[in-house]
Length: 55
Image (cartoon, rainbow, N blue to C red; front, side, top):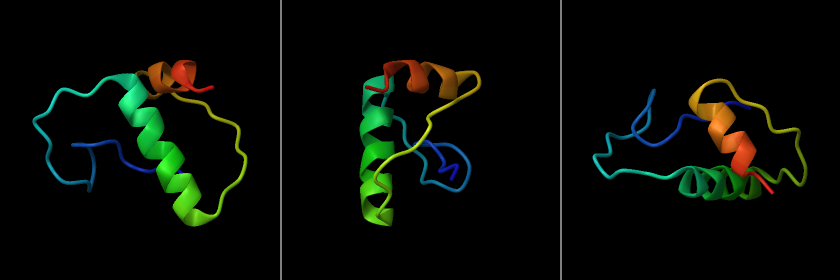
């Protein structure tokens, strides 16, 4: 799965400055909604920063 971050791709535009931990929480909520209980988390560029915040 590769969901769009806030304000990117097909997601709604968001002018609020977001920190990586907020994006981690978004992904965790997305996974929960999809019934995903575990995953390898990798990322490139901004996604890499999010992956490093994952715990």
